[in-house]
Image (tube, rainbow, N blue to C red; front, side, top):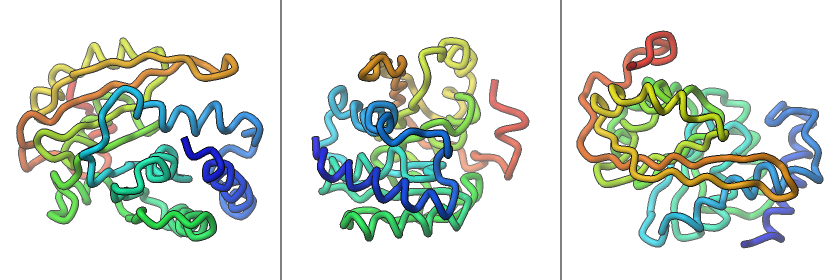
Length: 220
């Protein structure tokens, strides 16, 4: 684990956060590693990322988990996607400051870029943390994943109700739950889970549906 680079990232993130709200102003710097960095990269203990060439982090905001994953995966190209241009400009500033070069940024709505041939079914791995309830999140994420690739949903321990209503979404979108990894953050900072979905077939062209529809009318 590249702790020195992570500490540089935290310092830069908190500095930039004074100008644009990337993370809650109530977030304490001394807790950030345990609650956010550790949470971002512990997935590497559960899954083999050695053949991952492309990773997309949707709803990336301040770059969590995308930037910590990029630090740990220097041979992968990581793309941060967010609908807010100011946040992606801030992410670029942070990346330049800490000298991480294997990261791209993209600005746009998930529902639109999910149909863009430059993005659709183009990524080995897609990640999302604190973006949306799971049925909506699957419609956001799976169109970006290559067949044979994986979507990793970062969730709290209270995930079972969300997962229970995802059968229809998975059937329609071409995904399959293959692993559930529960873990505890250091220093009693909370319990979390990774839900790992494999893309087993192409997503039908009509998904994701138009802007706002996946959120208002999830596939349940």
